[in-house]
Image (cartoon, rainbow, N blue to C red):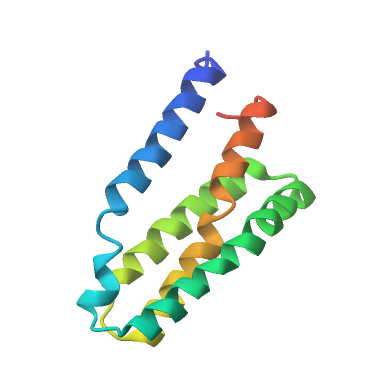
Length: 123
């Protein structure tokens, strides 16, 4: 017998929040550590704006495919992989690519998790 959906939902959100909380203190120093100038940091932050489109598109894709749970798992795995890309050597181009790819896969994660809870599909 599987556990009740609410504890699994709380565990998922606690894990997501802990992940954001652990990573957030280190992110502001990353561009400076790479030697980026303020204008380059602005370009990098503008790349994060892709999240405004990626969230709704990712959720729409999950609806279209009918595979919210599978897509959520894939996005979490991709987010981990792209987040690790911050460790790659390089300047603005490398960091911009990593940040944009990470933003693309990160944006739909929380809404998809919420939709799974609403549909009682959180397993």
